Image (cartoon, rainbow, N blue to C red; front, side, top):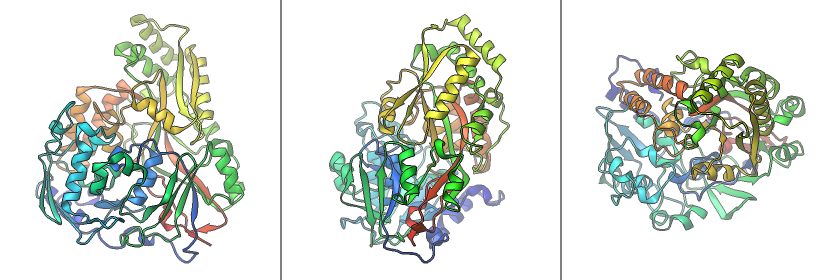
Length: 545
């Protein structure tokens, strides 16, 4: 259902109708799974979610991994990233602006509450309203009335662009035509929640009631220990659970998780730690995966810090970027398992380009980096006692090794003090970024929510976006992104998105490092393991042997 694969001769309305009404059925339900023990509980690695599990308040992978399994929205994504209808019967628009959405009849949450058109409208209005301060609120920005609802201090709590027609039909009016808007509807922010969630979101978020292929076990969330999910017997969508449940064990570091994997005490490890990259293929035999996915790694540098603001800050960010030898780090630290970045998105996405003007700022050039740093000093002197820090989480992802490699390069190539700033958990690091209290840079990056270039740009770099760690503001970039969304086709929109990237490649609110590659492994006790287009294991498909 990727629109860019549809004939360009088709009008926008025809493209949307073809894409959204023809996606029902089995989809990813049968992606290679056969045989095996359907009763085995799969033990997987996880991380403590940053916030209670309200779908519109999730913008990190710990919570997102759980939410996509316990919730079901209008669509989900198959292993290749193609949207497949879940609750949607049809999603149609004559003009890419005025959508009529019909949902399937007799849908229910696991507590028995009915899922109706009103459920979606209420859930989306809650997610967008300023008073609710949901981290993913900006995902609703395209809907008419969002600006009034989301304005600081606003008492308006409904978007004028949402209308309930009947129990199974609602309409959505966007602020402008956007050809790729339906692609977003599988993201967690758009998932429906029952009325109890809106009445008491904090309590609900600890024991969420959903409608996905799994549900939370009784007392299933044991904070900082594990999260237990069991199959939802009433789920009849394309992601039916083929196992007895998934328990996400929360580890303090990936090295401990890897040892549990080798001892068959862990069934699947999403990411091999950097300490094991040289040997994991030998250790695991044929029980590993290595393939590119829609994800990247960056370093975000907050512009609210005086030394990183204005023209001097811009020059320093360019200097930092050019002082890094990405090729060397990806070869030495990651054993070739990463690709040096050439833009802000990912090569697996339609519309990706490796030759956007400004991408030279991502090439290693120590001499030019020093020159840029000197130019910044001429505008605003850098205190030689200041330490450039990269905050990172020590529990997941094996970031210590590459952070140390980057800071060593910065010390050698720029002559500044630089060091890593570790936090025990991902949650702690994200809380600091979310609250705008960073004292230096932070390791960031993006795992795609839906298959679109825009998803790597708007939610992270638009003014006020929920994941804008740098607090970047540039009206020219915001307009370029908006122009891209209103393009008459996804293909034309991709061209506009890459024009917007030209601005980012000069400003560098975050410094792209490399594109991610799925490098994971599994135990001898499971089969039918594969990863999706977004680098996440297809947990529902895994069976015991």
